[in-house]
Length: 171
Image 1 (cartoon, rainbow, N blue to C red):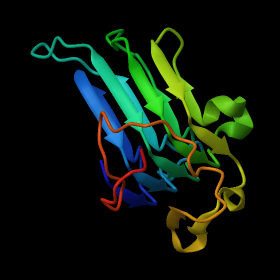
Image 2: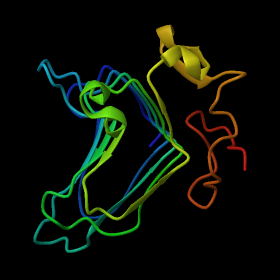
Image 3: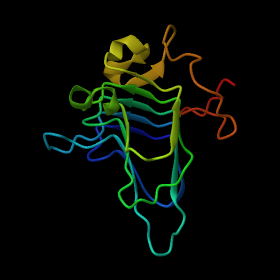
């Protein structure tokens, strides 16, 4: 949590394994550019159980800003069939995912069929200039006055109470 990654190679945030995994308050710009034509996903989750970890993987992906990903902005797979139920994706701001041209809106948040999840209060779109970032050219993805993201997210104070800058989140 609370990471800022600009131009990450491969999947910028990669969550695999078992148990409860949180990804929140991250900023990812130009994630997944690995030199291949297709690229990788900016945020990638897949189950990879070990013989010592029998807990199903469950993910909470909250309050992330993902901009200009090479492929999907957020992708969740269930390759080994051990992803648990109750996966949550809330308040993510996802702009200009590379695979939208190929897969439509599924390129923003792509979750494999059969995975139990709730995805709410996420904002997606293609035009970075329409989201009210302070200075996207300088990689300043703070939201400014007039942003459509202001006051659009759900209250997540049960999970955390500060934002990327450690400022209190509005409740």
